Amino acid sequence: MNDAELVGLWSDYGMYIGSMEGVDLVFMTDGVGRWVWSNPIASEQVLFRWSARDQRLEISEQRSIHFHNMTDPPTVTEDHDRDDSIHASYHVGPGHDAVGDPVTLLKLDQHIGYSGDRFALIRRELELGDDPAGWTLR
Image (cartoon, rainbow, N blue to C red; front, side):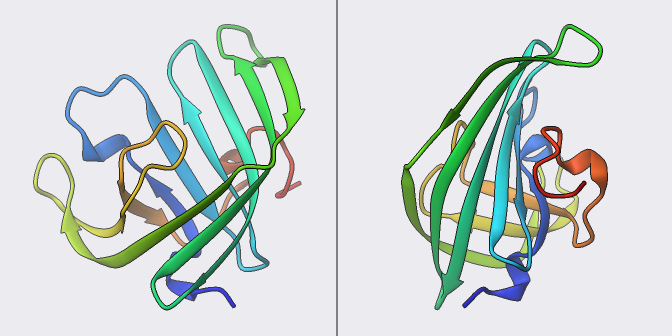
């Protein structure tokens, strides 16, 4: 069972002042998701399966791909399977970004990937650009 309030694109970019990197989280209705860490030079995208119930999130990572962002299009430098699991408590509710603007906030009790533990909802509807590796939205 998946919690519909998690579905969409979440980001920690606006949550920390002066950050030169960030993590986007994507949760799709079919239980597929991904996190994308990026900075101006490189990025990593991890494909996962997810489920959530009673404020508990379970993520089962399946595949990882690394990009070098200094080329157009970005160059894949690494692609491999993963089998890491993440179990986290979460809360979705009103909050504020780093400059005090109101956001819908996803708060986790642990980090996912290279992220912090707070993400702002960017949008519920996903776009092709939200999937740099082309795994799920093409």
